[in-house]
Image (tube, rainbow, N blue to C red; front, side):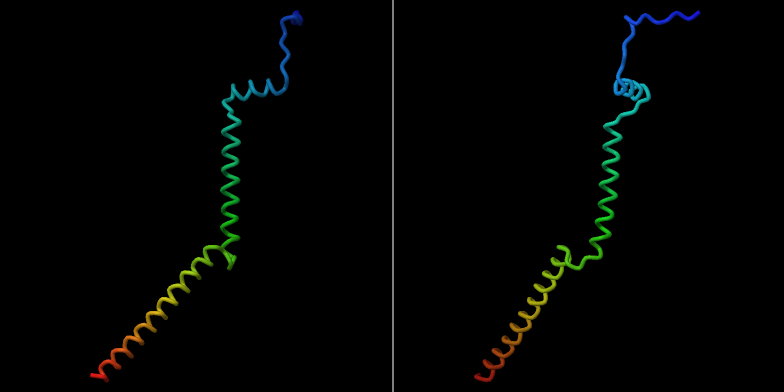
Length: 97
């Protein structure tokens, strides 16, 4: 026959303690798992954000490109004006000689 356990020698564990013991025995690391899951969620959110931003026409990148294009265009216009003034000045000087 099986002898009943001596209740004075029995340790009662909470469910959380029992789960912790089981996780340690099975090699489960909750911190690493939660960090991996968080990284996967951040990566998925980043991909979604990139897809959404591709459709925007008023992003910072686009506005920077437009700003740079306008600066380049204004520099070209200024260069053309300067070249025209130089030609006009040089022909005026040649006419005086």
